Length: 250
Image 1 (cartoon, one colour):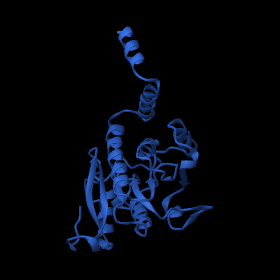
Image 2: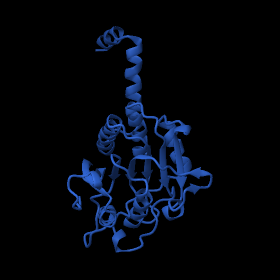
Image 3: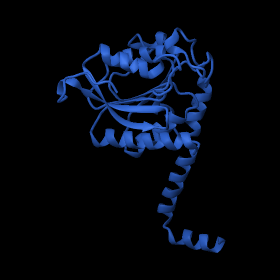
Image 4: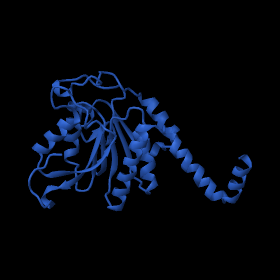
């Protein structure tokens, strides 16, 4: 078997073999489990669609626990030759406290799912993401998303894709309010915990999404790709350009 492997290697040009090794290394930089496989396929489809359709803008991620999704977004964006900046908005201290019944969930515990800022940057370095290609915005959203600047950082206005993974309804509402003035036809909106809800009432990210669409009639959310049992994504469409002017709730 070893001789066969050597013969196969000898028949492959060094340049091609190098590219195969790079692809292998990029794949295993992010853990190859169920979650990463589902998200990787979603990211691949998303950045392919954005590239093919000529949608400009940056990648914004709200909730970056563990750095896996962020790393997948980077590698898939670069696969299609995108030079978009990647933004991570996170407290880097875990989940904030629940503020009402719409936030209730047995898994959303204050302080849980915490990846510190230094740890997150170490993950990015380990996964081959250059420091100049991404920006971190530490802090809870009520402190960072209600202004144009955080310190000397000017927040982005042109958004190609927003990935919301902040679990709580209250946090998601704040994120959608921030995105409202930045939403545009053709961008992709993904909600990692869209189907995570309370056994007693409509809650979480899905409720925040429904409330947003009821209050802001400028847009239609066209279902795009479901990932895992929990996540859902949409393509934002300008309702004025939509054949049907009637509100449609996903």
